[in-house]
Image (cartoon, rainbow, N blue to C red; front, side):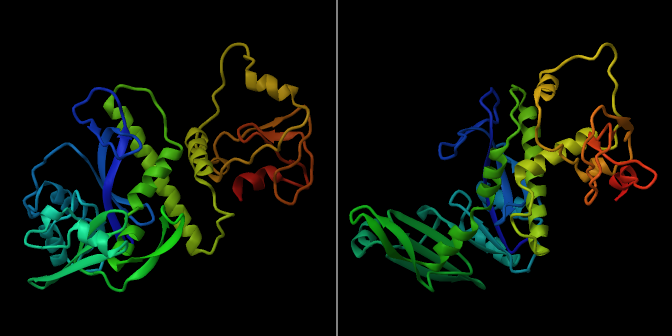
Length: 362
């Protein structure tokens, strides 16, 4: 689990009839089931909860309000007093929530609604606008052993943030487009705003990766949509962990498998790994794919199956093809007629070269 984590909403697209269906106008898919997710800044999810309305808080957790209780439930897997940092938006942020997490050694930062800052008087929007773009106001207060920083920053409009570990300083400049001057200008940006923008997008990253190759199924059953959504989430999570491991070993991004290929490998492994070939009864049927294969004079090389299929030691039968093909064992230049019926690749099988055995064992 990484140091920087975020809690945010995720939508499972659904337009059927169900009382759990929600409408979120700010999301790309506005209708569907809302899932509240705890994820790292790299997009790896660690906990989630399907939104079903107000629920009873477990007795071992404090009650800090309906939205704040969601964060406390999702944050249970986070190790205590390990200096983890948690980010969330203004639907969750409140003073009691941040104080409760601070007692557990979890630092927080998030956008906050002004009415959730009782007794805090910040500069009004008109005054900040007169001061200029990039102006901000900061208030600091001690509550017990916790220092709270409330920062209001004005860019195109104002935004308020609350944190227990970072305030407005150090202030850095960020690039912003000026519509009047028609050019990019430098605007002062408080540290808490920069920290929030940098680490809040983990759930959105996960959601965008799921949407790239979502399993599309037309069904009015709510559990079908949720089940396939969680399958997609699991696949993306496995790919993100794979990329993390590849980066730790120094593998370049060009050598790493893309998400589309990774997902197809999983499908191929589930369909073929450890399974015998099924022989159909009756006369062989001609398919469009088979006819197209016969028409091709010269096409791309036959792909090598994934290791889960190649090394499963199940139903790899040798057959003789009518035409010769290049042996698929690296370094072998033979062109045998022998091929594996399951892997559909040509392999040498002679008294001097047993590529068939090497291909299925190494």
